[in-house]
Image (tube, rainbow, N blue to C red; front, side, top):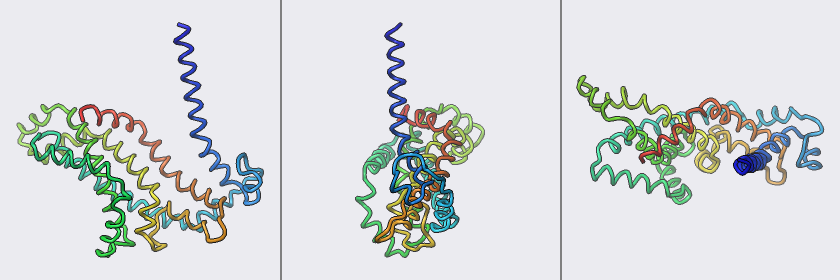
Length: 275
């Protein structure tokens, strides 16, 4: 009994330690965003001596937050829509009709998950330049959709396999076709896995810096994360304003996760049971 209790205490201490290690950079970011330039130089780690809330006003204005937020929402929303729709519609026949072609396509999608985005960046950028899609929302929507659909298929396929086939048989008896059965019967049951895909991709797309920086070279088209780069000049870096901008970028993503977190773990577990 004492060994079990001691083990539990040690486990809790380890968890507390990891929580502190993880939270320290985040808290230091928030504290640094509330410091003046002089205070930040004198005291880079620690509480601010005076709260400089004006840093957030400067960050909001210089990064043109409303415009950058709008661009990010358009790209994020469009990408999520196509990721979920294409991923779900591709996963359904793979999970239900086990033909050689479907299995080969499933393995192909799994293989593409292992390809890093940096490996295809140069030919991808050249393609977007030749098609005139640079400095458009469409370029990033196409990229994010193509990059995220394989993992969505993997997760959705595993979840659909856990759904009893009797539901589709009952729907077919009532005269429902495969397309209607999927959207009316199967897709509503995929709520947890769909939520997981949405959360994972919102976190990725919202925080992505590299591809928006490369494909959206016009300041009016910039998303939130690359807008932080406005505070990094050739000879001077306005760290306190950059930290404030980083906090402003983080807040929407954190709120989305807090609202949808109850479905997140459920979807991850359900999507990996029979995949």
